[in-house]
Image (cartoon, rainbow, N blue to C red):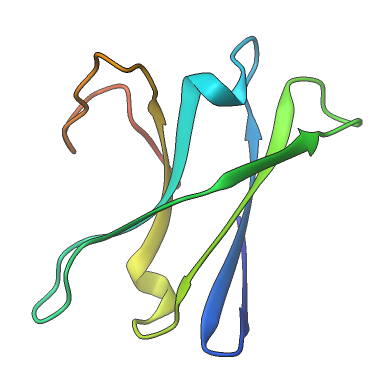
Length: 97
C-alpha cells in the first residue's frame, strides 16, 4: 500500500492479487476505526485496469480527508454479494498487514 498527501487529502494505492476473483466480487476499502471524537471511516476504493506484469492483480485507488493521522487508516478486502452482511469481525475480511 502507498499513501501520498496532497491538498489536505490522503491518496491510497493498494495492489491486490485477486486470483480467480474479479473486482466486482470484492470490496476494497480504506478503513479507520472509531476514536473519540472521530467517527469510523469507510471509503470504497476503485480498481484500475488489470496489471500486465501480475495476472489477476489490480491496483485499487481511493482518497480520504487528511483530518486524522495516516496511521489511523488501513485497507481491507471483503467479499461482495448482494445478500451478504459482513460485520467487522467476519473471518473472510482480509486486513492489510
